[in-house]
Image (tube, rainbow, N blue to C red; front, side, top):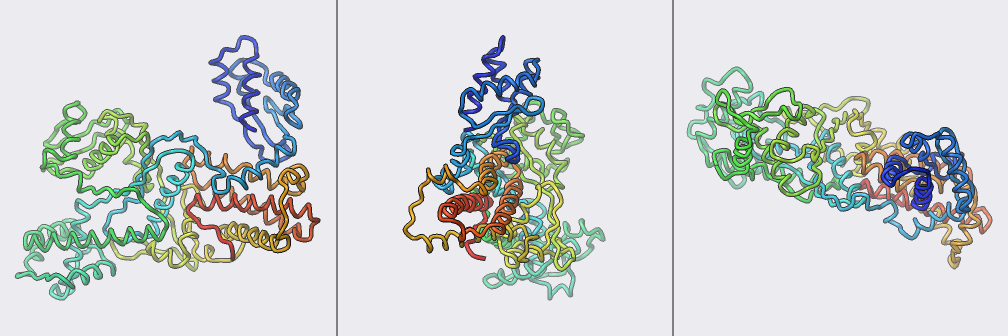
Length: 580
């Protein structure tokens, strides 16, 4: 119906004196026709006359009055009324208004899907937590956010590939390896354990698993503890150098085993959280700077050749002026070692070369300062920095029994994602991570998430779905042989259902808006409002005591409501409940 109205509006604008086709297109592109907020303003509303008046330098009220008359003459709508400075409110004929029910019942899980993405090729890289320990609840928010925007973009016609970037190279992995080795030989160290090593039971567990099939023995175990720096950072670096020197074979074996163990646990936790990836990209596959054929070397060489990187004080720098970064960034240190940034430059070049239209990076809010330099690298390598879309996600604060739960991978004090899933379930966890805009702080109350009350929005929405499912079941038991006459229902639909019909007709627009803005919380807000409307209706109307015709109309409507709730939850990766 909106498409038909827009076509009639376009014809009207085209008929105005001295209006070119280009101006008509400009007006149509800037204006919008949408479902009204409530039925007091009709079923649909459009701001086209306000936009046209501004673009064409005309009087908005006169335009609205003329469009009102024009649309009413067509007799396609029950009523068209000009409202305010350039707005038009449209009330549909009852059959047209209620036809959305039939569309939902027929489309089922496809209701709300669209092709506005037009097969755009999009890559989403998210989570990408260093494989130095289990995922904790701080990682969970980015995990579900990236997963769900991928689901929404797919549902609206884009080709989406989800990727996890495994930081399996560099200093943090060396610290992990040293931590595991030190735990294995801890009895020989008389209680010594570096302040900046990774702690936690998982380090000890990895060590115990490793020595089941391997032997770790050093001839002079104390040699690497001599003359260590009092600075914690320098101390751990010295220990790493000493351990590599003492036995490189043991070092490589422990490193490989530790990485494999943690990556396996990360994959298992994400699977349990209903988060999957199309690809897992290893940082180590980018190669070493010392290898002239590696991706890192090729990226830096290209930047040099194109004049976008230069040498100064023995280091190699990227010129970031074009992106507005506050200073130039080091790619290669003066001692010849590549920086983390050099790996990121090579990785983003790899992504650009794979031919995606958009690159969506989901990062923690603490990475805000990193955006400009990555944009600069993409532009310096010959691509458009607008290809990169960075979405910042605030870490969630977890509360249990009124107290904030501490989280630190380095100290070993953290509430893991696995713990969270075991405590409240993957669906409830996903829901609450998504319940607020991703770049805003989130206080996650575990006790509320487990409660059976309307303050628990997850429970409230699931209860709406389960209530309708139960009602449908009872209705079918009461009327096993009843054939639903759709046309008769659409014409004589019980008017008490109108607010529910109006609300579910908004769902496709909510999904589209979520896709365009990359804001999945809009779907949760919508489901909350729809569920609230349903519960109020249900509490005020004893459905199974209505007349046969009214009962039939109500159940038909509520089936569409249940399907809409189910579609919304499924889009969020949450299973709708049939029984509470």
